[in-house]
Image 1 (cartoon, helix red, strand yellow):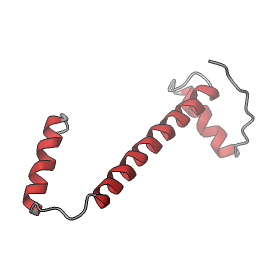
Image 2: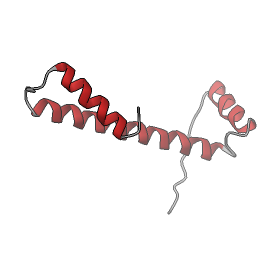
Image 3: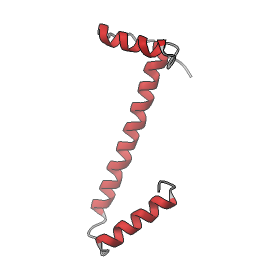
Image 4: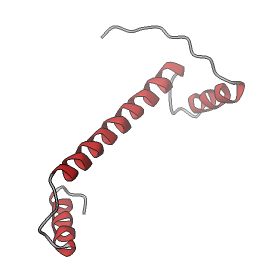
Length: 85
């Protein structure tokens, strides 16, 4: 994987924060910290895209014939199957 060098401008307070994270041993250098932030942002974005897709699919599926109780039970069962509950 190739790398690209970037220049980032921070306030003194932001720079102090990054340095404190490195000093605590959470990261070994500035680049590792910023790459971690980018990975987290990518994961968050992917999660939001999944949510948007699910909402759109729900809207396009029309009105359900199921009762609210049936919908809750199905959701609870799906969460159990997925190991969330």
